[in-house]
Image (cartoon, rainbow, N blue to C red):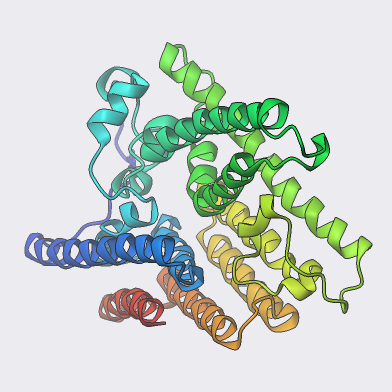
Length: 379
């Protein structure tokens, strides 16, 4: 090697072994608690007809907070380790099914992958550059929903053509298709962030020669189109409501096929309320592009996420999209916590050079995530 040569290689975030074991234990306990609360809360709301708004508010807020370590800043290793333990909760992977996913998708890690996007992504659970293994259970759920939608369409078609002969054709109910459309809407809202991140990672590794690489790349393009169409659908619905109704006139209940889109929102002002889900999706798209493509400019990454949080705050104060004061206050609190977390991330870019100061901020960031979870659980 020539004298004076400098070798540079990215390394994963480091942590003391004993501290790592303690943080892993704490993260595991908190993760189990979150899983139990989410499952019990979801089943209780589903069976007893309870309000789902605080439940989804907690999940959506934690999704942003737990993905913040993907920003390329010098975040303390113990903070990233704790948040990584909660990542599966926000991805709805309540049981380890990696082996089953690999069998169903034909994924062979040793033969058909070259590692993740970078060491930070690899350490945080995105161990492949390809969408299907990174999505895991979400991809399987997507395929199951596709099959269920086909069956629902066939069932309603039979009902329309033969079973309900006394009702005019255009007025016959399609309850199963309406049900599946609401399931799809909620599914797309909750997995939009994870899907977008995995798709963009796959876009950095397009053109592989192996069959799995080609199929995963093709699926990522297809899924990106699906996500784009879903965003356009929500935007088109906003424009339709905005131009065809008076924002000050009560509009009544939304159509049954997109009722879940208005969950907790003020249905008397549908046009103004729809601005929230539009920015909700747009913000997740910006966040995904930022963490995947903006690694060379960490300050720019943090400032982009911080500005998006400020814009969401302004939108909540201006539109007041929720139908009750409690839900409005809860969402303002969640956004304030995201904004505070972004300020923490800004301190990890170099504004705080002292290691002890960064470690203290790392502990406060962990405490912030725990506070967000417990506040949303208690509402």
